[in-house]
Image 1 (cartoon, rainbow, N blue to C red):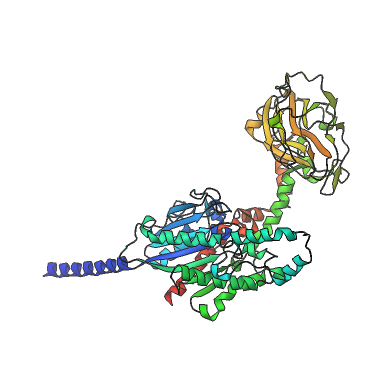
Image 2: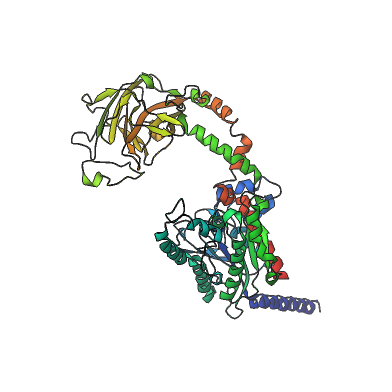
Length: 598
C-alpha cells in the first residue's frame, strides 16, 4: 500500500514537472535590444570590480557579478550578439557567446574581449535572475555617434540647420570658425545627408539578421515557440550634448523630437508597435546638464508612449568620490611625469619641491657637463618629408662612418663641444619662453649628442631620465638604447622617464656614455625652426622614495587612490567605473521588467 502511494506521488510530481518544463519550453524567447554610443559600448575595465565591494550598498551586486573564485560570472541562460567596430563603423564585427564580462567597448577589434563591461552585464544578470528562462541580448553600439546625424531616424526628415545657426551662416558668406564658405555649403549638406541614419540602418539590419535565425546565437531557441521583442534600451547622448550647432544655446528640444521619431521608427521597422522602450538618460557630470537630461526624458511623458516608454536617470549613479579624485590624479601625474620645470624666462626652476628627492647620477653635475654634438640632414629621398607634420620624428640614414655614433668607443673628437641645452629658435608655450641656449644647434634638422660622466656608486633604488625635448628621441646608455619617444611634447620642461631593471642594467660604476638622437621642429605658419635638447640620469634612494611618497599624499591621498581604483577612463564614460555601469545596467533591467509585467 505504501509503495503504491509513493509511486503515485512520484508520478504526480513527474507529470507536474514535465508540464512546467513544457510550459517553459513553449514560451517565446525573450529578446532585448541594447543600442547607443560609447557608454552603451561600456568602458569599465574588469580591474575596477573590486571597488564595487567597498560600498555596502553595492557589495551584494558584486557577488552576483562574480564566481566564488573571483572570476566574472558567465550567465548560463543569456546569450549575446554584439555588433560594434571603429568609430566610423568600418570593419564591423559581431561578438557572440554567453553573457559574461568582456562585452564592453572593443574598439577596432570587435570580436575580441578587451576586459570591459557596459550596462549589458548586470542587465542580463538581473533578467536571468528574474525571468529564469533563456534570454537573447542583441547589442549594437559605436562610440562618437549622434542621434541628430548617424543614428538619425528615417521619419525625422533630413538634417536642417536651426534658424539661429542658419542666420549666423548667412552673415558669414566667406566662412568663419566652424562655418564653411558659401561655395562649400552644398558639399557640407551632401556629406551630412550621406552620414545621416547610417548607424540607425546598421542597427536595424543587424537586429533583423539575428532574428532571422536566433538559434545561430542562442542554442536554446525553440522555433515553434518563436521569440518576443521584450525591450529596447537606448543609452546615448554625449555627442548631442556637446553639439552647439544642432542645439544652439542649450536648446535641446530637437533631441526630444528626434528621439520620439526614433522610438516610432524602431518599433515600426521591427514590427513591434508596443515594444517596451527604456531611455537611458545621460548622467555624466551627475545632476548637471539639466536641459539636456530633461530633453532626453521628455518622450516618456508623451501620451502616445504612456505605459510602454520609461526614462531611467543615470545621474544618481555618478560617483562623487571618484569625481573629486580625478583632478588630483591629473595633478599627481603632472608632478611625477615632470622631472624639472622651467621658469617663465626659460631658466631652470631650482625651488620646485618635488625635485629635491631625486639626485643626479655621476660627475660632473649635469649643468657642468661637456657634450659632443653634430647635426645632419636627411639625404635619402625616403627619409625626407615633403610637408609639415607634427609627427616629424623618424630614423634616417646617417652619413657613412656615423652608423655606430652612440657606442662608447666611437670617436667623436671632430664633433662640436658645448654645454646643454643645445637648441635654436624660440620655443614658446605654456607661458614659458625658451630662446637662450648654452650651445647652438645649427642649420640641420637632426642632432646627435654624447656626454661622458663618472659614477662612484649606485646606491639607489630607482632611476629615471630627465630630458628636455620638443620632438621625439632615442636615448642610449653605454651603447644600448634605453628609451624611445616618437611623438612631440609641447610644454618646455624636463620629462621624467622612470627606468626599469632591464634599462638600468647598463648603468655602471666608472665611465658611462649617454647619447641622444632627436630632431628640430618648425611651425606650419612659419619657416622658423626651433628645438631644445638636454638629458641626464637621476637616482632615488628608498629613504627618499618614502619621503616623496609622503609628500605626494598631500596631492593624492590614500582615500583618493582607493577611489581611483574604481576608475579606468574619462568622466564622459562615467570614469570607466564598473560600479557605475553595474548599477546602470541593473536599473535598466528593473525598469524593463516593470514594463513587461504591466
